[in-house]
Length: 530
Ligand SMILES: Nc1ncnc2c1ncn2[C@@H]1O[C@H](COP(=O)(O)OP(=O)(O)OP(=O)(O)O)[C@@H](O)[C@H]1O
Image (cartoon, rainbow, N blue to C red; front, top):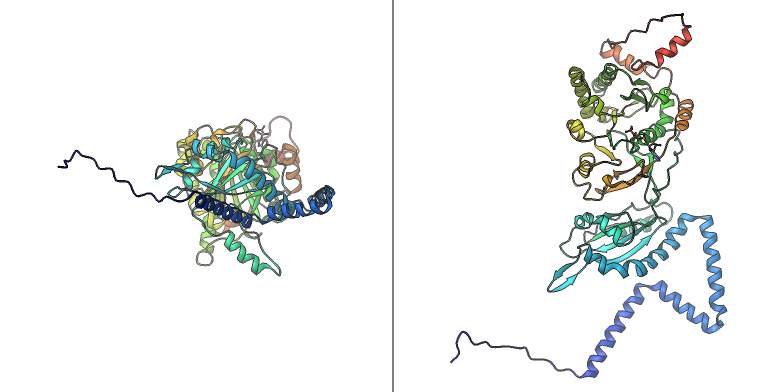
């Protein structure tokens, strides 16, 4: 009798195949794989076949002569047109080389140790490396994720991945980095169609960009000053891929967070420089508040339509006056346009504030602080559309500016002191997506993270370094027009009383000063319109 304790072992019947059939099957399988590989790598196959044929026909010379010729052609190509040389020759060749000899060799180990492998059906499954493409500075790895993985899992271990492949920096993108190139001419239609396929949305892929040569290690020289600034693309910094990072200033406010001596000045001055053409033509008016007594900005005074650097009252007045401009524009433009277009007659007003916490947190006069907070709130919530923008820098993004932080659509994080501050400046999750602004090495002055248009992942950039001499030269070459401060007077005549608060002129003591010298003294006094 069978009891519940008796075990029955059931084995499926084994199909016994003859050995020759197994060997044939394996051979066919390998042949099939080799054929697929050949189809997928036509260039290598072509080169090997051509090399073999040349060797058979002409011996060693058949290999050496074409190699020397190819080297010469490549050198001339690079000399004449380096960009296309990288795109069509060096990039693919280097990418293939690094795929085979660097990434594939370490792939299994790196994926496992970075925690990106999974177990399915008792077998390990890991992300698949599909392709590596290189340029002067970066390797872009196209990776197929394991089913059920998300790009965030890669982003969390970005630094681990960089170090796993022997580099310091990497970045993970959920979409193919870069935009399709603009296509013009005869083939535009065909190439555009190919681009649409190449750049289609592929949610199963993730792009790991490994920084091979850190282009941000060297100081970035100031960019050329555009005669007419493109307010939607002001070149301010160098990207890791050696391209320029441009700021879209129109209709946005910009917040720059960075610890002391992290290079906030270079961001602000790079911006001033990129706007300089518009400053002298009257298209842009800079209203500058420098609570550090003018230490940062006084040198560029001729560039600014208005400047306040000494008295907090004057700074509050300046902000109130910016609100007056805002109100006047709202009244004038309501029902006509939704976004103000700057012209020389109706210029863009950019209120630049260095060290914003000095106005919003450290100011002891509570009444004044409230007044400043209310003007700032109005400017930040309503100014972007009417061309009154705020660009503010601050050291500590914590409690001080919390009420205003979310009103800045564009943010830049330079070196910060704590990990938590990164998300405060760039927005929730930015650090997890790779913005390691709290881990800046000491040399990285002016290096920061920005969010690129259209991608959620932050990019690392280095702002151009503007020296004191550059500032002096800029101020001499692109001074604001003599009537630059008038914008307010015009507004005042139409909609508001003239600003009431005017600091009294200092009474000359001692020997009488000539008028010209007195005028200079008045000009350098904080808060006075030019
Ligand atoms: N883009 C840059 N490239 C190279 N060096 C830079 C760059 N920006 C700033 N520096 C250097 O870093 C130092 C600090 O710069 P800066 O004064 O602009 O920093 P900051 O953040 O404005 O400082 P603070 O908080 O004191 O105002 C300076 O010695 C400056 O020369």
